[in-house]
Length: 591
Image (cartoon, rainbow, N blue to C red; front, side):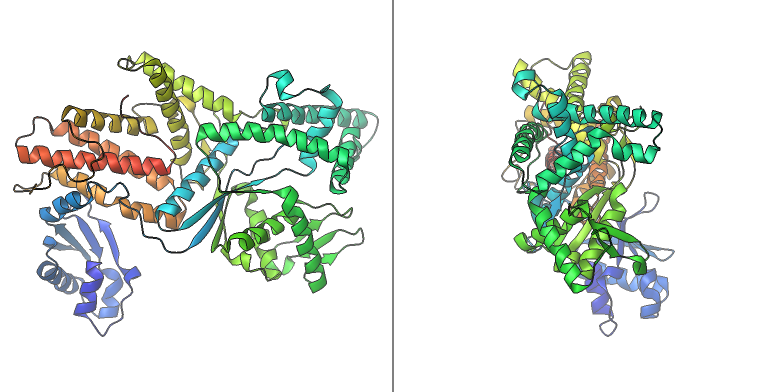
């Protein structure tokens, strides 16, 4: 960084930390391109703001060849960058489809996301998780990390047994083939059937004089489900066969949904494998005296000294709980890949759970504890309110995807923009627009915030949407087609181009915005926040529209200006494609 080098040269005996140097885009009301904040150095260097600003500004102008002017305003040094720098930046990066990426660091990160249960299909609530995990994986990869995308399948436990019991009672041998249903949808129906039957049995027991608490424990269908879980953990062959069959149906359904959404994983873990390792860790914790056993045989950890409470790790009957298998999975992930960081994409409802998981692993002196990071996100609701899977009020992920594609088709047809497309092309376009709208809307909000998803708003051509960005990209493609210029050139189409006249304000603003993409990516990785990439992309698309409406390209004032503007829009399209590709969103060349 030029400022860091200047400070080191001007004040060689005074240690300065590069992290102290704050550089921002200059506010529109002031002259300049970038602003250096001087305040952090005043006490350290024993200088007044104006004196330090003048010394630093004079040095940068004289020694870098990058700056044309500077101004000092109330403790801020505003720097103007030479037009030649911006033009050189364009020419050097015009054919770099990986602009913004960082070299490999050797750091290995696992991102765990999706993590569905095999008692129901993927529902709309899963989609924010899935898209966050996939986007963060790509952002981390682009910023120099080796990334392993992982999925932990919750394929065992009482919730799975609930679907199994209901299928045994009510299905009469129904299969995906006999019903025509996707396997995950079929199994999900029996999870809802279980809860319907359970509520009726509880109500009946209460009417017979039982307390609500006892009724919930003694409902026959719940007792059957718990017995099924005990048999499963004991390795009962018949129970295991049914479990494998029903899970197989669900996996086929999941795979179909993942494929349509463009979601992939490098590693899949199954809790039916990891829970046994979790039990071994618990047993080791007992031997070390870190954990303790209660009179009923259950195993606990005491976290009261850490400001928390006691946490159950193993039931009295020997069956495991979520925490048991999570301990095993955490260790297994670390042992398998020797990862530096293990990112859990899990809703903020589980903040306490992840806090406890990390704390227990630390107490057990497991090396995997230090690398655990919780990418916590707020829940998604629809305008109609919150979804509840056990009551059958969830919106299925497949149904929401179909609805988004339908809305894309409806909007495109109503706007009369279907000319020039073959039927097969239109189908692909509707899928691109619909899925793009769905992903962008769920990613554009800071993950830590709760959000409401409005399908129609998410696909608004004039709103804060992927559709708006896709249209800007298609507009650039149309311009370049008319000029017979490649959308992704292997080299600059104008290698001899030199800027002779001054850049106009919007020309400079466009190039400055493009140059900032690398820092946007870096910040998104550091903050685990894909929304900053979405916000940047939307701003860039807006800026392009403003630029194009103000300045003609095909009928530019001079040939020089035409070439400059073509270079600007080529790189704009490239950066938009790169950014949206990280989000899993395709940008069409025609709309």
